[in-house]
Length: 207
Image 1: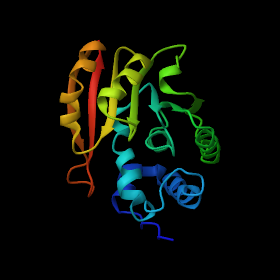
Image 2: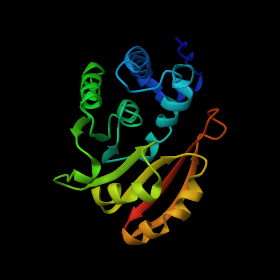
Image 3: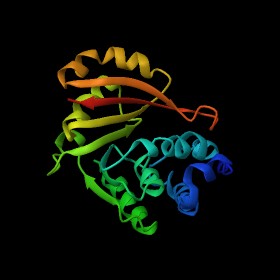
Image 4: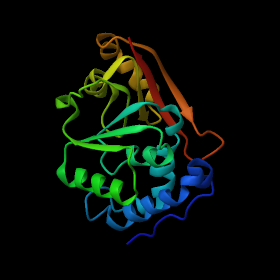
């Protein structure tokens, strides 16, 4: 079994006075993640760097009531809920074993700002549209926009975590961007000079 990555020094800066909750989340995920099908067997040596800090970097961009589509292990949803107790997170996940984990972990961490919904994003219709929607490692942007944009109120925002090909994905999603009336579409790089693996997000406003 591979060993859990040591906590990077940047973690303290990103989590601030919530670092102990961040450490507990990482420890819980390291202990149960593989057996519960939340993370792969090779992820422990990069759990902090690739997954947790990657998710924490997006937290300052979020506000109001935010949906996390395909929340899975709680990346970025539970991490954001830890870092930003002032933000209300709706974790949207279709798989029961993952929603069980999300509920159990939110309770264990004492996160009162988390609601877990078992549903596919395309089937979920919130009573009130969300202020923002985020997603990480779900699907290509051209497929992700049609399932996330309808959840966002007019004037609300998509904040989607993407890899190095983010700009290429934006170009390939031009038709979906027009169809759903997205404006101010841009790629932002977060954490340059702060963490070893910066995070790219695609941001877009729903008109």
